[in-house]
Image 1 (spheres, rainbow, N blue to C red):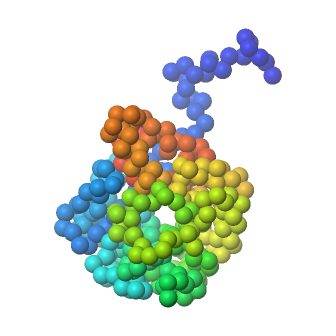
Image 2 (spheres, rainbow, N blue to C red):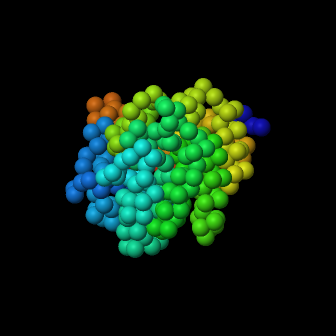
Image 3 (tube, rainbow, N blue to C red):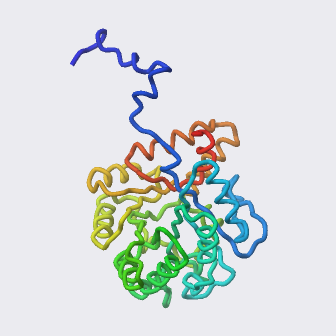
Length: 322
């Protein structure tokens, strides 16, 4: 291999050559827009801990999707804020639930939009945990049939992809079985395969009203110190029938994204979560960082190996990509 002065890597960094040799490319096709649909409001409501982000009323979901489509963003993941909560999350699988109604509205107006739905109980239960609770314990196996019911209700409403996020053992197999038995064998599952018990989720809990009333979620979400365990989680979900695997959060776990890409070569999503969004927005508002860091962060997630990125920055990045 030639060495300096014959080899000069700066030759290909000239302004009119840089893009030609760019190894990683980010486009709106790679981005999924999270939408918080709140059936308790009539106008969009700012989320205090997520500057520039809002809860959207059910009647406004089509307008929100339309604005995104104008920017070239065609994929969405919906989270619901219901009017009714109980111990078992009944409203999560109610055919007239907030997500079910939102999906029908979006698909009726924009049939080609890709609608992903979050399959979990935390937003719909009075205790705020991702599974059925008995005597202070989050029960794994008793939760699985309910997750199946939620997924089927979303598919019936027209969801293109269901995304279980509760980190219950066996959740992918249970949902796959429920979908297949209900005639939805063509609906893919995007599993939150390696979801860490992260401190970066705090703003989301305000946004989705999904805070827990006791304990924490460390009994089912992953230990932040573990990497090999993530590979086992992902492998199990693939064996159970996951079509897409997800790493969450993204930025502090780029190593996990890279390991998953190299080991499995499977369709891979990463969630650029609320805390990552909020800390960047706060630093920009303070003048400590420029908005250019947003694009740089998303490129780093793509470069690590993610095919898809769920991000609250989607609209502002899409404007720059146009």
